[in-house]
Image (cartoon, one colour):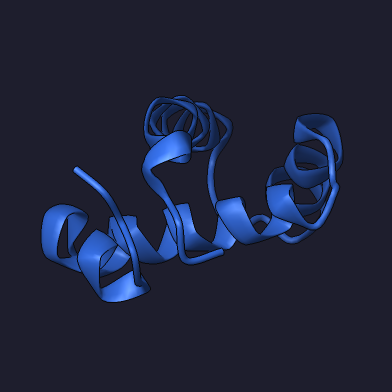
Length: 70
Protein backbone atom coordinates (compact mmCIF):
# COMPACT_ATOMS: atom_id res chain seq x y z
CA UNK A 1 0.00 0.00 0.00
CA UNK A 2 1.25 3.43 -0.89
CA UNK A 3 0.54 6.51 1.22
CA UNK A 4 0.46 9.56 -1.06
CA UNK A 5 -1.25 11.88 1.44
CA UNK A 6 -1.96 11.92 5.15
CA UNK A 7 -5.58 10.96 4.58
CA UNK A 8 -4.39 7.58 3.23
CA UNK A 9 -2.73 6.84 6.57
CA UNK A 10 -5.90 7.94 8.41
CA UNK A 11 -8.00 5.55 6.32
CA UNK A 12 -5.78 2.59 7.15
CA UNK A 13 -4.73 3.32 10.75
CA UNK A 14 -7.43 5.67 12.01
CA UNK A 15 -7.11 9.19 13.31
CA UNK A 16 -5.18 8.57 16.55
CA UNK A 17 -2.63 6.09 15.28
CA UNK A 18 -2.30 7.87 11.94
CA UNK A 19 -1.63 11.21 13.61
CA UNK A 20 1.08 9.75 15.79
CA UNK A 21 2.74 8.00 12.85
CA UNK A 22 2.56 11.25 10.88
CA UNK A 23 4.11 13.18 13.78
CA UNK A 24 7.00 10.72 14.07
CA UNK A 25 7.66 10.51 10.32
CA UNK A 26 7.83 14.30 10.06
CA UNK A 27 10.25 14.52 12.98
CA UNK A 28 12.37 11.71 11.53
CA UNK A 29 12.41 13.23 8.05
CA UNK A 30 13.60 16.54 9.50
CA UNK A 31 16.82 14.78 10.49
CA UNK A 32 16.21 13.97 14.14
CA UNK A 33 17.40 10.64 15.48
CA UNK A 34 15.23 8.10 17.29
CA UNK A 35 16.92 8.99 20.58
CA UNK A 36 16.30 12.73 20.14
CA UNK A 37 12.65 12.18 19.30
CA UNK A 38 12.23 9.73 22.21
CA UNK A 39 13.80 12.18 24.66
CA UNK A 40 11.49 14.98 23.55
CA UNK A 41 8.24 13.02 23.11
CA UNK A 42 8.45 10.51 25.99
CA UNK A 43 10.74 12.05 28.59
CA UNK A 44 10.22 15.80 28.25
CA UNK A 45 6.71 16.32 26.88
CA UNK A 46 5.22 12.99 28.06
CA UNK A 47 3.07 12.71 24.92
CA UNK A 48 3.23 8.90 25.01
CA UNK A 49 4.59 6.07 27.11
CA UNK A 50 7.84 4.34 26.25
CA UNK A 51 6.15 1.12 25.08
CA UNK A 52 3.78 3.09 22.82
CA UNK A 53 6.69 4.98 21.33
CA UNK A 54 8.46 1.71 20.54
CA UNK A 55 5.31 0.26 18.94
CA UNK A 56 4.75 3.34 16.77
CA UNK A 57 8.43 3.51 15.86
CA UNK A 58 8.45 -0.15 14.75
CA UNK A 59 5.29 0.38 12.69
CA UNK A 60 6.80 3.50 11.14
CA UNK A 61 9.92 1.55 10.13
CA UNK A 62 7.74 -1.09 8.45
CA UNK A 63 5.74 1.39 6.35
CA UNK A 64 8.25 4.22 5.93
CA UNK A 65 9.22 3.37 2.35
CA UNK A 66 5.53 3.43 1.36
CA UNK A 67 5.02 6.99 2.66
CA UNK A 68 5.44 9.44 -0.22
CA UNK A 69 3.75 12.64 0.97
CA UNK A 70 6.55 13.82 3.29
